Amino acid sequence: MTQSRRQKIEALLQDEPDDIFLRYSLALLMEADGEWEVSIDILQELARGNPPYVPAYQMAAQHLVKYGKPEDARRALREGIEEARRQNLTHAAGEMAELLVSIGDA
Image (cartoon, rainbow, N blue to C red; front, top):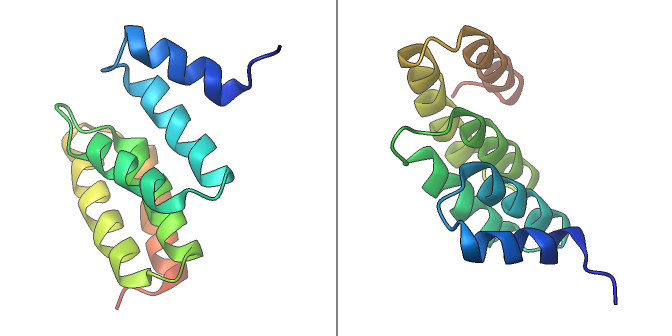
């Protein structure tokens, strides 16, 4: 029987539970499978990691907007922009700023 992409990632995570990219990938697949709340939890954990994983802020915000939580999305984006600037990731900061403007920086 062929394993799904998600099953493969879950198997890899058993050997490497702290692998940021695997965890990020699993979160994206979970959202696609309708498990968006767990997906957002994983993304928020990655954003709080050491060091924080900057792409997780934007993806969490996109999911939060999609599922009717714009204020939570704004908060994630503001935090993500600050962290991206701390890490000198100006392109990521700019993309998050654009998303923040598009949903309204209330």
